[in-house]
Length: 390
Ligand code: NAI
Image (cartoon, rainbow, N blue to C red):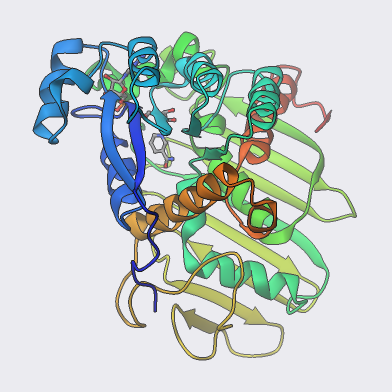
């Protein structure tokens, strides 16, 4: 059973850019990072509005002098302090990620960045170059990838329990934007604006998550894809609120990705189904503690987290946080990821490459692939769904 015995001499001194009061995802970062005592929030530029940032930060217990007007002030002032920040999480709208992440790496900080990491592949590759050059960890917040049952699935596939993988069907299709809610919802409004959201809405916002899970589970690499996208709420054009992607993987496997924000009546519907020559696995984020395992010719099996019949050793993820029968959820998944980000940062600081080589976490390569997915889908969809090399 997991417990919080792993401690550094001092928790990593950590800041956030974005994620301020009322933001959708700020609390998930703070909860995930601080759960196990390996990060301590000491500073931030949480908000576009400096006064609200200071008020919010002090309510969180920070020194008001360390609640900054913007990320430039944050990085510059903290670099001058002996007890300045060592790591930063970036949870701002998409258009700002590249500049903020770049500035953070140039200041010598470890970075955890929201997805999609950048607008262009070339920018994400530049962040990789900088992170490598400075020996900094770059984590990408594919927040669902810390669920233990996904790692069980990964291990089953790796050990050949499904046989050769033939089909990978992906979907992340919710219904929250089936009407023009962006008229009164600021978090939805920026997502429909290409200047802020980037060249895509649902492929970038939703598809990148599930696409990462496909690679993580199967190890398969996409060779080419084609995409059809549309905006059922017309005012969202040129950005799409629905997209269908066909995927062809190297080695012969095929798949689909359905990303949608207009799947009326659905709360989330993020699902991944992997079909092998002998058996299939299916995982659904609304029931993340279960994995559906279907062997041809046998009754369906529902595998439950933390049961003895699962692999006891899954190297990519740690022990369970609570026994079987209790629900682990989204926040535990995030804590599992932040735990790994912290171990990676500590190892990088000690130049401990042996640990870094064995430590699984979504890093900058995963971020680059997500941006490439967006670029390829847009190129395909805007050219009558022609096939595009990945
Ligand atoms: P939001 O609009 O709800 O909140 C954004 C926050 O950032 C606000 O507090 C705002 O004041 C602040 N902000 C905006 N520009 C800033 C700047 N230049 N400097 C400092 N603060 C700034 O946005 P939301 O939904 O929280 O999304 C933020 C990012 O997180 C996006 O990239 C989004 O794609 C990603 N996201 C990821 C999720 C995941 O599961 N990993 C889930 C939801 C969002």
